[in-house]
Image (cartoon, rainbow, N blue to C red; front, side, top):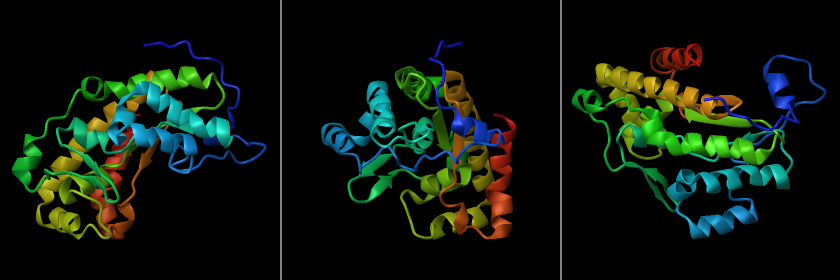
Length: 237
């Protein structure tokens, strides 16, 4: 679908990403649309986390907050990497003070085989609606970054069920049930490729993969459980 978006006024980030010489480094911050902003804290009191993620008007408002208040060179979509497990049929709860929790986890090959790669427009269409609305509301001030979690990091949550300092249960799963791990990683990868391409079609001007927990892997395990799936995504965007 072709969109008629406002002309981009600050293309510093996109020029830098294209390898061009730029007058200064572009600046944006991880979690720049977040709890340090008083206006965001007001919305957090009124709406649950996933209500904020699933309501395009709220996503746009939250995404644009730091652009107006801090003056960064890019906006990054307000969302969460764990919308992908949701699209794969797994419930995700956000527990105050603890973070994400998945009541159901992937424990074996049978569990991995039961997962269906979804139609991302059907399951995550609200994200694409939010991307398009945010691009319009930005009015060309700065580019919009979309994102997804890298497959290994998503697997960590789907196996462990919650955050962990070392994800020892996840690493044990990968070594003791390699077939299940690779099948799950492939299904996450296929979903992520479709998801990021849909974000781009909806208006994202750059996309990023967050592999929060890949640093827990040894170099050998990274080569087996992380890098091949990242390469697949990059090659298919």
